[in-house]
Image (cartoon, rainbow, N blue to C red):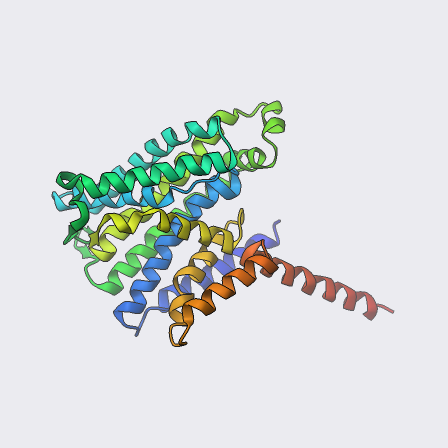
Amino acid sequence: MSSRRPLALIVAAVLLAVLLILPVGHGSYFIYLLCSWLMFTIAAMGLNLTLGYAGRISLAQASFMGVGAYTTAILTLHGWPWLAAAPVGVLLCFVVGLLLGFPALRVRGHFLAFVTLAFNTLFFLVARNEDWLTGGSYGLSDIPRPRIGPISADGQLAFYYFTLAVSALAILALWGIVRSPWGRAFKALRENEVRAESLGLDTRRITLLAFAIGSAFGGLAGAIEAPLVQYIEPNSFAVGESLKVLLMVVVGGLGDFWGPALGAAMVVLLPEALRGTRYYLIVYALFVIALMVLKPTGLMGIGKTFLARLAKSRAAAATEAKP
């Protein structure tokens, strides 16, 4: 464990350096894609906590992104600073996620999926029909970008670095959660609920916390999306977006901490990289299908398999080299 920690710190430092340099010299659209990737990484990591760690399926992550986005947009349009409005949206998502977690105490599997799907549909209908609050189908526009004292994130590059900073803090917070006793309790709940309860874990509280914390991360992603595009409308948070976030989690590697980041890159960035081909969407879809059929553990599973085989071959070579 001690030998792996310095290596992990070095990899994290190199990755951060790459992300700091990556947008320099590129156009606004490329920077927008990077911001979208970071935003969806936060949302997917939240869903991964609920589904991958705690084993409770949710098809409502887009609705929590919507709650965070609309809350942040409405408050900032009324003069609130982003640093005050975003925590309100995150806290609201935490509370709503806590309430949505109660059905998970009684139903499992596809029944729970339908419950969360119904909630996402309910949110979409409210956002579309309550014009006095959400702007209805016309949405909300001219959403201001964050300003921290004299520092403004109005420019695209400045907003990218703002998003990167918020994402880094969110990832550090989630890393602390999954490494804490709560994280071990989430995994125990996923593996065997009866055994976890027999060991003294309060499975009801752990289930509710899994939904609440995962929903809060979705709200934080929405709080970033509102100023990123500076316009939000109900279709941005429909059921299809929840399925998109679910795809990120599954493709990246369900239950793996860094899986959602890779999955988000796959879903957000890969289609743009393939856009030069004539049938890029077909190529992208076939690639995803092949990945899920051949390697259900996702991109992180491929990486772990490769590293395991590499270590095995090195061990075999070292054994043969001995006299």
